[in-house]
Picture (cartoon, rainbow, N blue to C red):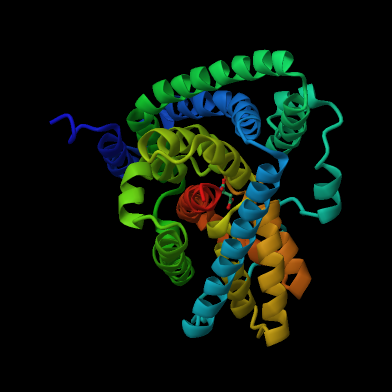
Length: 395
Ligand code: ASP
C-alpha cells in the first residue's frame, strides 16, 4: 500500500486530476492558482541557496584542481554534444515529416517577445554585486561566484578550510531536508499548477496546431528515450529504465512547473538519495546543467524554425539548416531555466535565417503545453549527464 501511495504515484495522480479538473471545473481551478504559486515559490525559495552550497561542496570535496578541470570538461562535452544531438534529431524529423500548412494563416501580429542578444547575455554573465544576484535569483552569477569561492577556500590553511567546509556541509544537508518537505507537497502543487494551465489555456489550441505539436513531441520522445537512453546505457553504464524510475519525481515536477531551475531541489534530492549518484558530481553537474543544458528546448527551437518557415512558404536551404543547427544549440544554452524562456531565445534562430519574428506569435498558444515536455527532457538530460560524468570521475 505504501508503495502504491508513494509521492511519485500521487504526483502522477495530481497531474491527471489537474487536467480533468481544468477541463470540467475551470473556474474553480483558476481560483486555486494560489496553491500552485505557493508550491512554486517554495521550490524557488530553496533553489539559489542550494545552487550555491551544492556547487561549493562539490568542488570542496574534490581531491585536486585537476579533478575540477576534469569534471568541468566532461560536463561541458556532455552538455554540448547532447544539445547538438537534440537539434539534429529535430532537423532530421522535420525533413522526414513534411508539414502541411495550407490551412494555417500567417500572422501579422506584432509580438511581445523580448529580443535575445549574445551581447547582453555575455555582458550579464559576470555579477557586479553578488548579493543583488542572490536576491534576483541569477543562477549563472551564483554558480560563477560559488566556483570562485570554493577554489579560494580549498587553497586556505587546513584549520580555516575545515570550518567553512563543515558549515556548508551542514547547510547542504539542511537545505536538502527542506527540499524533501517541499517534495512531499508535490501532488497538491502539481494538481493546482496543471489544473490552472488547462483552465487558462484550454486544450482546443492544441488541435489547430496539432501537426507542429505532434512533430515536437515525436522529436522529444526520440531524443529522450532513444538518444539519451542509449547514452545512459552505453556511456553511463546505467539501465535507463531503472534510472528513470528512481528519478521520475524530478521529471514530473519539471513537467508541472516548466522550470528546470525550480526543479533543481528535486533533481538533487532524487539523484543523490534515490539513485545514489556521487554527491560531488551531482552537486556540480545538476545545477550547471539546469542552467545551460537544455536538450528539449534545443530540439523545439529547430522544429519551430522549420515549421514557421513552411507557414511562410520559405524553403530552408542546407546552409540555412546548418545555421539553424548552430543557433538553436546556442539559443538553448543561453535560455534561462524558467517557463517560456525558449520562446525568447528563439528570436536568435529566426533572425539568423531571416524568418519573420511575427511567426512566433503563431506558436505562442501551444508554448506552455510544449514547455512541459521540453522542460522534462531538459531535466532528464541533466540527470543522465550526472550519471555519465560520475562514471568517468570514479575511474
Ligand atoms: N522552460 C524551460 C526550462 O526551464 C526552458 C524553455 O524551453 O522555455 O528548462
